[in-house]
Length: 66
Image (tube, rainbow, N blue to C red; front, side, top):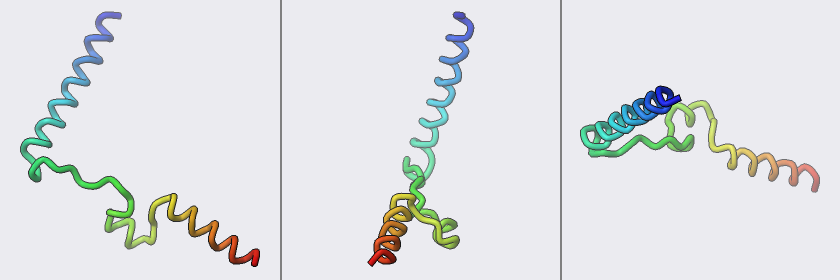
């Protein structure tokens, strides 16, 4: 059991080192946005945030009912 705990701790430590390297040495320490609405590829395909899509579908449904 102790081996599993040490192995898990090692994996987490390695991941933290990679994050640190990314923050310190790449693009002034900034990560790219992970939001769908900021992705050019998603915009080209017409895909946007699920909350926006849900709102649009609800509005269409309400318009059909009137």
